[in-house]
Amino acid sequence: MNIPLLDLTRKYRQIEPDLRARWDETLTSMRLLNGPQLAGFEREFGAFCGVQHAIGVASGTDAIFLSLRALGIGEDDEVILAAHAPAPVIEPIFSVGAKPVLVDKAAGDYGPDLGSVRAAISPRTRAILAVHMLGLPCDMDSLVRLAGENNIPVIEDASQAQGAVYKGERAAGLGRITPMSLGPVKNLACYGDGGVVLTNDDKLAESVRLLRVHGQAEKYNHKIYGWNSRLDELQAGMLRLKLPTLDRDNARRGEIAARYDDAFRNLPLRTPPVFSDRTSVYHQYAIETPDREPLKKFLDAKGIGNGIYYPLCLHHHESWIAKKLPKYSLPEAERYARENLALPVFAELRDDEVDYIIAAVREYFSRD
Ligand SMILES: Cc1ncc(COP(=O)(O)O)c(C=O)c1O
View 1 (cartoon, rainbow, N blue to C red):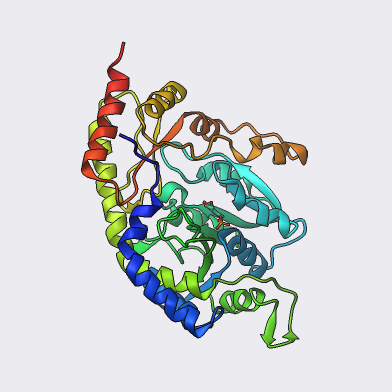
View 2 (cartoon, rainbow, N blue to C red):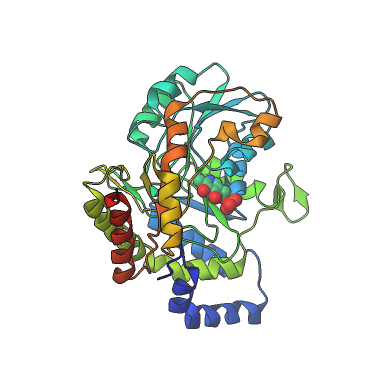
């Protein structure tokens, strides 16, 4: 068998006729930007997330950048985040002139370690950036409480968690502002780049709306210097077609994850953390094992796609070292980077493929 880590063609086949009809409508009208599809997507996705404002932008990186700008974060300000995160989350912090301050990952959770966050707060701290890694919402109540005690906002990056639920609410709008990527591999994904910023704060929403169109309050009247960041009509129309099936697709991911959890229970590996009051949408299903490299080779040989999310912590990238940024020792994030291995968990995976993956992992651990 040959099973990719993610097969985008399967979802495409499901929506192809409807998508072609929708795109035909947009192309015939030649209304390509800031039109009815964007307005419709913003309305529908905001309602889906239970958040007042959803503002489409060009990418997740832009969504973070514009969130930082809207919060007024800039030169010499500090933003705290866990070192176990994808590199794009850090670039916007540099772009606004601020300084990232890294903390360890929590043991048994994907979010930042609360004690490390508390210790990292300084008079210059202007935000905590909480990333809902691999589909699992962070412990938002604790983070929001800690941030509130220090009068700083939580920026909640939900790029890997569209549709996830935290204590009965969607994992969006739980912090002050929620940047989200809708890039091609996300649970709710564009066929290209795209992103959205969600917030219940009217002022922040107004700022992001202004910033994404070069700061123009009206055409050719630039109130502030902004940016060009647009979610186009083709992408927005397509996202509207996919949104009604997001919960079903996420539930299927959860079903596959539950089968893996069950099948791997007695093996010498760790399965992803599970919490009764948080529903992960399993953007990735990553096991943890010190045997990662040989297991990876074994799965490769069996034709099973797999991935590492991520092999390096933020402070171990060449880009960080070249900037002569502080050296950190963050044992839990570093262990996770060495041991994690993601298995296929996309919604269109067939049961016989899941059986094959389970059998292969079990076979690996039963060898002498
Ligand atoms: C958690 C997280 N934040 C931000 C980004 C950046 O998003 P984009 O690729 O849409 O710019 C990503 C993308 O991989 C991500 O996973």
